Image 1 (cartoon, rainbow, N blue to C red):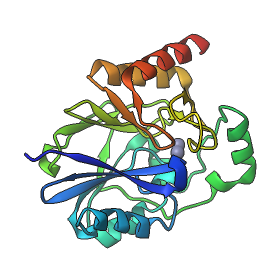
Image 2: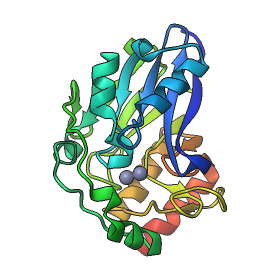
Image 3: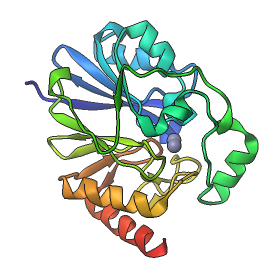
Length: 238
Ligand SMILES: [Zn+2]
Ligand SMILES: [Zn+2]
C-alpha cells in the first residue's frame, strides 16, 4: 500500500473548523464534511491533490454535530462514497437536536446564537458501527482503523492511522474561538462536551493504541504528551 498523506481542508479559516482528506495512490477518504454548503471547499481540497469527488472511497462522520455532518448527505450523493458513522450519533444525524453542554464562555455564547442547533440535511449511513465495534480501513486504501471514542458525543469516532496520526474529531480542541487564531498549541475542551470523564478515557484509549499526533476539528494538531497531560487534568476535574 502507498503512503498516506493528511490534508487539512479549512471549512472556516485559521483552523476554526477543519475537515480532513486522507490521500493515497488512487483515492482518498474524507474525515468530516463541514458545515452545510461545504462541498465546494471539499472539492477544491481534492482538486489541489489532483483528485475529484468520484475518487472518495469513504466518508467518515466523526460525530453528528452540524460542523462535521452538515454536508454529509450532499457529498454522499455527489461522490457515491459510503458514509460511516456510529449509532450513538444516529439520532443527531436524523434531526434530533444535540445535547449541548457548554464547556465555557464561548460554548454558552455559541449556543445562544443557535448556530449549532440549526437543522441540516439528514444523514443515512451506509455503514453503521455500534458499541465498541471498530472498522479496519485497509479495504478503503488506508492503513488504519476507525475506533469508537465516545465522550464529546455518545457516538464520536476517531480515525487512527498505523503511523500514529489520529483524526479525533472534537475529543479535544485548541485555541480561542473554536480553535483558531491564538494559543493553538494549548488544548482545551471544544465549545460543547457531553461527558468530560468519558472524553479523558477515550483520549487515554487512543494513546494506549499508539496515537502520537492528534488532528482536531477545531485547532490542533497536538502531540501525544500534550494530550496526555490534558486527559489527566480532565479526569481529575470530573
Ligand atoms: Zn462537536
Ligand atoms: Zn465541532
